[in-house]
Length: 285
Image 1 (cartoon, rainbow, N blue to C red):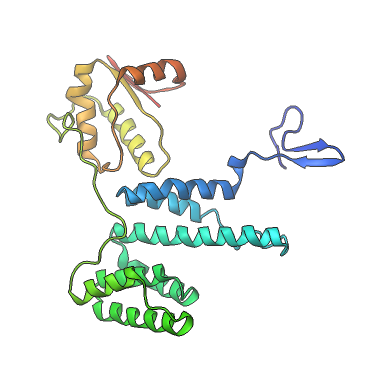
Image 2 (tube, helix red, strand yellow; image 1 turned 30 degrees about the horizontal axis):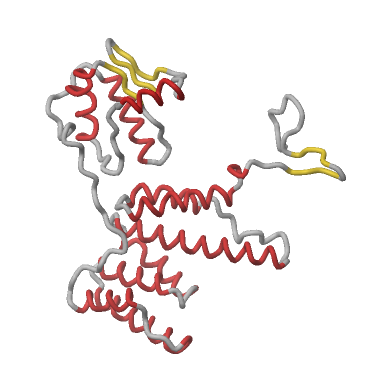
């Protein structure tokens, strides 16, 4: 069950005096993958790329099945780790909500946010996101009611006033101004050498179809490095200028070949499959 394709000695469940030892690559553990996805999503979100961050945060949330370690008892070391992961899970949820709001899905989140503030009434970040979602849905009066409800709860339960974020949101709503964003949304400008489409690309349907699929996978956070190998004039005039101008890839960087890239390609990359080639151009991934 642990190693169905094993052809030699066991590598996961191995004999180790005085019994057995379970040796698992940390990268195959849900908890490790969850933390890695969260660490990858946060800088992307802070840099103004909410769609890519949202993809990673959704992948992280799908790794959860109930509470952490709910079937291994309540020993102290278990409780510490369980609480740590629960905090990370809530933080990931809040980041996901921020990403969804940033791409215009505020109205769809109101129900989920009402559930979260009822379940975690001392977490101001959830109250703040609910205010933003209502305000951006044109429900300003309800957003102000949420602020008053949050303030009353905080004062009653812990004797403190709302923090700066909630107060800033109330001020913006009263002034009929947009809510200050928690994270920016800054589309990445295209390199000047690419720009918008300059000439239509004719006769490269196979290659363009392959590259378009590579872009789609990259936007789903399941892409890879794509190397286009051709004569410089052909690439500048045709394929590359056509690609970013046609597709919504503002969150993906471009890198032009440099001596260091060429050295890395020769030293470390061995293309295993040519996915598209024609005439004097080839592309690899």
